[in-house]
Amino acid sequence: MSRQATSAQLQATYATLQAAAAQVLAMIAALEEEDEETEVETRCPKCGSPDVVEAGRGVDGQQVFACACGHNFPAVCSPAGAELAMTVSP
Ligand SMILES: [Zn+2]
Image (cartoon, rainbow, N blue to C red):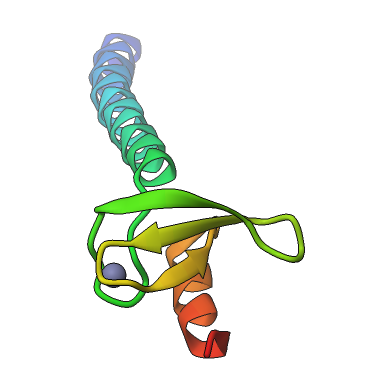
């Protein structure tokens, strides 16, 4: 009898783990979608506007963008890099 109870408990635990795994997979899929969006969309580090156009290459060969507000900034990989670029640019 104790063996049957253990089996039922294992089945319940397995079902719980399956539900948790499905939740984690859904979260990962959502995170990956967000990453793709941030990679595609470039925003001006000065005013935050997504209304930017490619403006050639900088002296270091990095892609430079020009914003509708008149601010030019280099392409960056992360929001933290965008803040850094805003700090170092004149
Ligand atoms: Zn701007």
